[in-house]
Length: 289
Ligand SMILES: NC(=O)c1ccc[n+]([C@@H]2O[C@H](COP(=O)([O-])OP(=O)(O)OC[C@H]3O[C@@H](n4cnc5c(N)ncnc54)[C@H](OP(=O)(O)O)[C@@H]3O)[C@@H](O)[C@H]2O)c1
Image 1 (cartoon, rainbow, N blue to C red):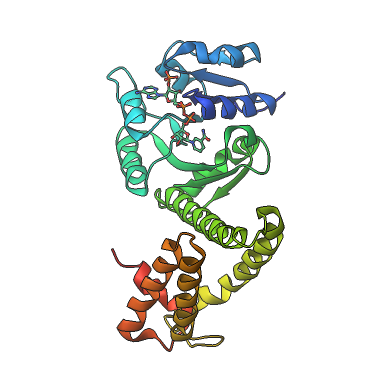
Image 2: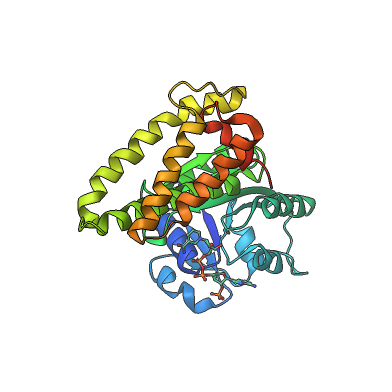
């Protein structure tokens, strides 16, 4: 318990309670505040101190974590006339978008605070384990000054000085997650028409997903260089296979929206003259509004 830095957690919903609980478990003196004070009861029983007011909570530690519903709630909470942010170090783990994160940085810094933004890629029960990935962006020196405290929460990662990065990486992770899950579900629906159950298909799907993941570093080099030689296949050939996938889905009576979306993007890229290039040339379609 000795020598651990005190830390304040403001906002004790499901996530805030998990964050404060992980700090307590790691031996950090933990100061908490929540609009509905009763949500602090369990944490206080475990050794947390309930601050009497937001101002008291902010002054109690050299690091204050805010985790409330959204940025508007954060603004209402910290913008009250009796709150002095001067000299405070804030880490906002409230979910939002990159513009909100950059604006929150400007707003708090104008009021004399130091500000890091963060995104939690985990559910509350995972907090405090390596499985909980927590992304941070803002001044590197501020992240490093508090990293040993933040380590109590899980796998903490620093992404860069732009305050919007944590939110952008969070979004990139979510689009990956839902795209992979949708592709797996579409394949599962196709196979179920032949009596193959999901558990039988899952190991095969996992192998395919892992194989595709191996392509990413090489494809990323093509994207960064802006050159897409068809080393393994050309988009035109891929589009013919996509047509088969749509026909098969329709013939089986399963949902064909996903292969149609995939083919529509490839068709636009081919129409723009990229048919002889390799798949990652589609970045040009994804980069448009
Ligand atoms: N739960 C998850 O799995 C998860 C995962 C990743 C990220 N997150 C993010 O973490 C944040 C908190 O999520 P949660 O699951 O803890 O939500 P939650 O259980 O609904 O808790 C919301 C918290 O925000 C507080 N709050 C809302 N409006 C407020 C206001 N105007 N002034 C003061 N406090 C206010 C609530 O206070 P009261 O108790 O007084 O209502 C409560 O402490 C969200 O941005 C969420 O997207 C959650």
